[in-house]
Length: 332
Image 1: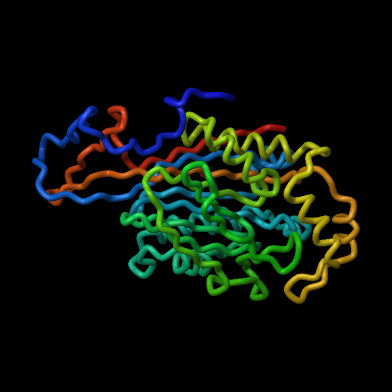
Image 2: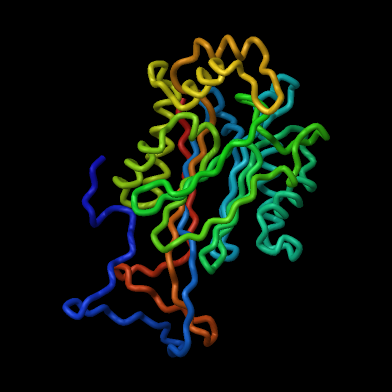
């Protein structure tokens, strides 16, 4: 999967020296350059692989990508246990994401992911529950995150993971979740974070089906070898899927399960059912699940103060804009 340096994810160029003069920025022909400001935007790629037994229905994960501010994305993972009550777990997660997209530009939301979670959850009428994460990039480069449960997000800078969200759970394999029932969590329980990003930073976000089946070093290796964000999202999802069906792969999920057994499975005041103790004691291999991956890269555009004309930052002749692409792979 090797790629030449020139084809990998774009990184900021070093400051030009007197021996290598930098080309001037290209202007919109409709507006001259006067005062200008820098704004951060996200270029976003996504990939989804449903659980092998849920290919026909598309799985129970849902997501959306938007261009509000510097860019926004969200993931919801429907809790599969509802299927035991003859409830389609996908309905809640899909409606939650649809509502999140609808309320994105709501005045009350005001670019606050926690408030967006509140309004989207309140408007969701389907029976069920889901874990969820919403991330919004301000044009100043500040990433705002609100997460309930075990969907995750990592920020990669210069080939290293420099930030990771932490999962919220009652006990192993029972995450916090937004629910149609009063017993569930609300936006008030969300983990809320802000991260100051730089040009070239890469964000990798996913459902637990992704992070349960891949290690940080594997994520970094795939990112370093991928020619772009779309290719990175697809390669990461496919690697996680490969691990999920490998009974010999010692996955993050199986390692965590064994660790909890050694510590008597006590977490936050909850004692885990006996069958989960038994499962964890013998557990090896990956965890089959829906896998959703979002990869985003921070880029910079120069905005002149006159009429909002865009000056294109020199990047191989490519204009940097907010982009969102999605691809889905359905494998048995």
